[in-house]
Length: 186
Image (tube, rainbow, N blue to C red):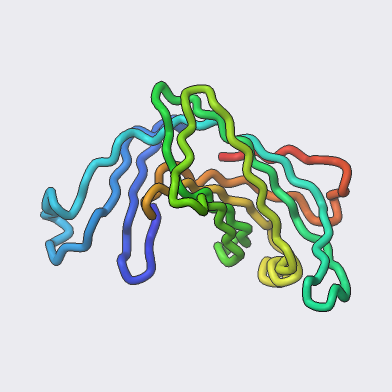
């Protein structure tokens, strides 16, 4: 289930044996009884696209751009998407989020600057990179010793196309700049 501020429930996904069997997306809010939704307020979305999502995380360093004074460690995540569907997948925003177990965190968007969309043909791959920049210390403080997660969601015209796909991040001290650690996305 996904909730949007001021809108309530915006997406409901049913999974059976780890595969999406039904996906409902709320297109608009309607003042209708929950027991009697109208066809205008709910729409069945097309089946979720099949994507192979693989990723790796490394340690990197963020250099403070203001005056260049000081640097801090940061997470750098590389995500590879492969279209495993029978049809092309189109999206215009790939959003990476670094989140605490409570869902608090940093969202970074990779979007097309020329108002065009990414179209992944069948079998085609695309690579995206995300990092925590100078916000790593804040994320670790917000996690309060708990785990951090990386989450990837694909959007087209502000609607979720695929995801979110989530992987637990290793502790920062487990990482090196030269060794990549594989992430397990669910």
